[in-house]
Image 1 (tube, rainbow, N blue to C red):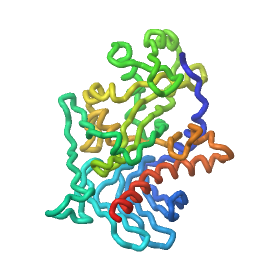
Image 2 (cartoon, rainbow, N blue to C red):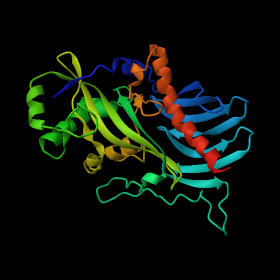
Image 3 (cartoon, helix red, strand yellow):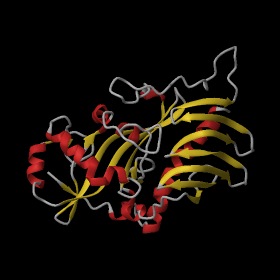
Image 4 (spheres, rainbow, N blue to C red):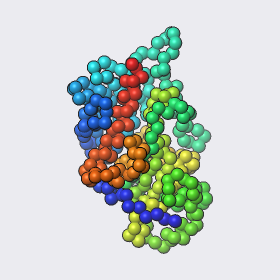
Length: 330
């Protein structure tokens, strides 16, 4: 059964300012133990470019560059006294060289050691996930994101991704899940769905993504893992969540969908999602959200405050990892 959804009016508002040109932003993040002023760059709505945060005493907290929200190149973190605590050079989101503190050549191996994980593709052409143990997940929170057409032209051109879902569902090579919840507990009968929407004008509005962000204490690195994707469409003037698909089950098929874009790391549709080559807005998170509300449903927030909360949630992820580095090197 299709579910009417009404959460997206504020999200569209938050995505409407996306620009293809690089834009610099400044944000005062008050949720840290010591307030930090953050200057960061976006391109096409993605966290891409220079990133600097400064303690309220004027001392620099961190400096580095982001690509699609992931750390890239040289990153340095200092404590509030100005003492350097961590320096790394990121080859890609999942591989880095540790510069400081130096790794001792002899004696007991400290907790901060070389990251042994290396990107490797399996026989299906998808990146192998690093093995993750629950006890190593120092930070583990879920995020729901809204992906509109702006900044995601490839996914929306000629309804490419939606039509790919339809094709896989009709061939029984992909399962669809009911939108009654996003826990992938109830299968949706594809034949029944297509009978409902047959001969109706369907307008693709957006995609919703459910994912998890994890800081792995074994590799000492933060990463996203997408859990599910949900097309949002307009049928007969009504905006609806159409179905959920479980992303881990799609990766093998997405690895066969070849892409040609201006990014050497991204060769397939699975690469696009793994390396986060998309624009999105956080609409919900489990961080400080005991009542499981969408951000737009937080009490007494104006439209501008909703956008500020969405921005803040993005930056908390980065600054939390900086705090971990400081804690780990005490």
